[in-house]
Every structure is written in C-alpha cells, then in structure tokens.
Image 1: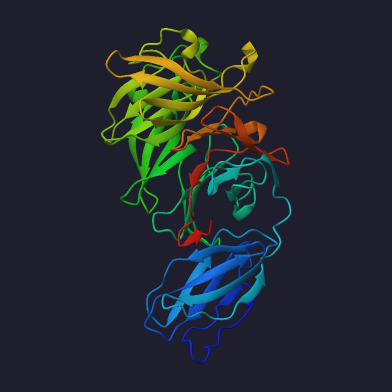
Image 2: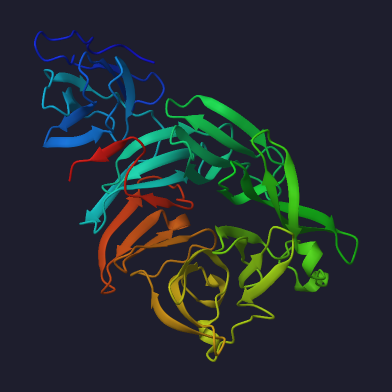
Length: 432
C-alpha cells in the first residue's frame, strides 16, 4: 500500500476517530479506510466528492478496529472522508486525493446521458490488455494490467466480494499460456491457474469452481488438425475436469465446410435456468444447452434448431454474447461483413408451444458497424439494452423506446470485450 494520508485520533466526547486513508501503490484509484471506535454502535465511513456526498461503506460492527476499501473512486479525484456512528456521532473529515492512472491505458469518452447507474466489469483487448471497472461516465475506477501479450476477455466479481476473477487469454488462435486469474482489490494475485487452451469465457459456480470454454484440437477427416471446442470445470486448485466437447456431439465436417481449420468456434457461455449452461457457437450460428453430465439439450439457430424460423433473416449469424430474457433471448449478432451485413442487436421471441423463433426487435448502430468478432448485450429490467460493439470500441445505451441515449467510445485502437453490469461494488453504496 502507498502513503498514509491521515491517521485517526479518537475525538473526545464522540467515541469515533477520523479514518486513516491509505492510497494503494499499484491501483491509483484504490483508497483503504481504517478506523477505530470506542462506542457500542455500528460505524461506517462516508465519502464526499467535489460535488457532495458520493458513497458510504457498509456498516461495521461494534468492534474496535475496522478496515474497508473505498471502491468506485476514479484517478485524480479529490475526496474527503469521515466516520459516523448509528447514534449520529461523527468524526472530522479527512481530505485525500487519488493518484494518477498509469500511462498506456485507453481513456474513454461519453456522449449523451446514461439511463443507468453503476459499473461495468470489462477489459481491454489490446497490447497490453487490462481488466477494468468503468462507471457510467466512462471513468476507470479499478484496473489490473495483464501479463505479456494476453488479452482480458471476461471479468467477474469474486463470490466473496474481496476482488475479481478474469480470463487472461493469450493472443493466439490456439491458447497455451492463458490463465484464470483471481486478484484482491489491491491487485495482488490470489491465484493464477493456467487453463490449457482457455478461450473466450467462463462463469463461476456457487461451489467456487469455474466453468471455462477451451479449444479442443484433434485430427479432422483429412488428418489435419481441426479446432473444436470444449467445456471444462476448473476447481480452486486449478484442476480441470472435462464436461463436454463438440467432438462428443457432432461429426466434424469435411475440410471444405470449415472456416479455415476452425469448426464450431464456441465463444460465449451463460448459466442455464434449472442447471447446466447455454453455449454460443459462432460458426454454427446458434446456441446449445450443455448439462453437467456432458449431454446436450436443445439448439437455438443453426442446423437442428429446436425452434423454427419462418423468416431466414431472423436467423443469427456469427453471434456472440447473449442473454435469455422472459419469453426470448437478446444477442449481439455480428453478421457477415463480407456479404455487406452490419452487426446488430437481435431480440428473438421464443414460442415454446409452437417452437417458433421470430425477431421481436433489432437495432443497428448509425453509422453501421461491423465488428467481426466478440460483441455483447445486457438487457436491464426497464427494457433498455447495452450494446457492446467490441472491435469498434463502442458501447451504446438504448432506451426502452429504442432511442440511443448514451454512448461510450475508446480513445485508442482497443477493443472492449464482454461486460458484466452491476449496480454496486461490494462493501460500498453510492449516494444517489
């Protein structure tokens, strides 16, 4: 940790001391508050920004000593913090300033007014790559640089709230040194598990394991290597257990039907209600249910789709991330720029009685964007949608009325990978 900004001294008559604020040496946006209390009341820290009250920590018990990371601050910000008790006692304010963000990190610009409040857990596909947390104004509030030429494709909160886990993917068609990295809020690595052939995405389980997508390379019909795909379970010791492979379910096509030497090109993963996972397959134009025992269920899109498409234009093509919603699914449908098609957000209505799929809504960026690979969506409870045009470095916030209300863009030639949107960060609450 970095220098101490202020040391707390118990103030006569109030029972709470001002916090000691310690700035982190490696994460310029991170400040940690420590304080003590001689009262029998719970206490917490309140932080003001230049525009007034900004955030509070969670209430802490009546113990003497406390510590809490002040998550959600941005670099170069001026802040003040105090300790308050539930009885209404308060310390004096302590002023502090967060540090300067490192050079080489992309900056972000926004236009319009965001219709949401909170944070995006994401990353940067560039050299170097970064795991990032952005607020709704495009300000970086946490970061961690990836090793070497690795990209960060997925970032998630740890179940214990003490940091993050992210997918650090080697910049190569077939990955060999990619890793699932678990870090604390101060950026120190709790674990780095090399996952053989790790690619694209992972989700965590309530048991503490991670379900990961990996490539599965085997000889094809001609004897040449073909890149298939698999799902594996990685435990907290880094041991990987196979769950399912494309080779288990389908016969590999003839070489002439492959996109280069790539087969299904599995690229996206989400938890399935009731158990198992939905897996996105870019080159097969659809999604498939995969269960813990390695069996597969229904497919949506592509050959053998369980839902029929009356209009071929409603079929997804080269889709990436997706989200199942009530009565359907919304996805980033990359389409095929070689055929003059631009990328779109596609919402499909799924009729589970007639087993039909129809386009309920679609949205194209203006001017059109063709992102070729990656891409993500996030549908909120109010019906608004975040659309992540990854390789264009653009995120759009589309209101329930279908109108663009906010846009974020990168300042450098860096792609935005998948995102996780959260309203709050662990242990703190924004004052809104």
